[in-house]
Figure (cartoon, one colour):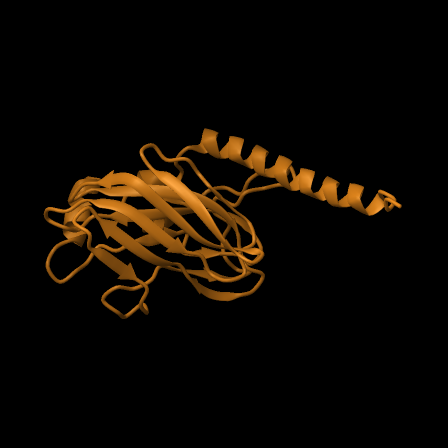
Amino acid sequence: MTAAVALGALAAPGAAAHVTVQPSASRPADLQRYRVIVPDERESSSTTGVDLKLPSGITFALVEAAAGWHASLLHRSSEVSEIRWSGGHVPPGGYAELHFIARNPVRAGPIAWKALQRYDDGQVVRWIGGEDSDEPAPTTLLSERAVPVDVVSTDGEALPAAAPPAAAAAGPSSQAATPGRNGLTLVIAIVGVVLGAAALGVSVRRRRPAIA
């Protein structure tokens, strides 16, 4: 079954294709690469924007560049509070896949990614409800037992292996489970440099004598 056919099945009467965030399970405090799947279930209007509210406790995030989309990060105090994608185009019956890296909160339990999906006719669908609602918010379960999938390493060790195909098939397309591995390797290197530079800056500031 192709991705387009599968999406059509999701959009059939009695079912609604909604914004999802993968993986659905991760570990507390891990630097995780997330995939945001944005399907367009409308008959005549296209998706042109997505606002994703990040759970509390996320203090570090990077957004992967996506062709045709402009992304911006919003901050609240020391936390990253929201990612906004705009300027893109998801036609009816299609879907977009957007990516970002975030440091998970240091706590176990479910976290919700409340999302607003914006359409070119001005309508907004609010994916912010509970899992049994008509417009559920995507969720991720943080647990020390979670199998590492696309976890970003900053310590130089090998990356964990990707999930087996059966687990990856939970998304709209199994081929989307390991996109852009070469790009991810570059991002990993950048993240390592950024975090290393930040640590060095802290060390230098602590050793520098006060100016009289």
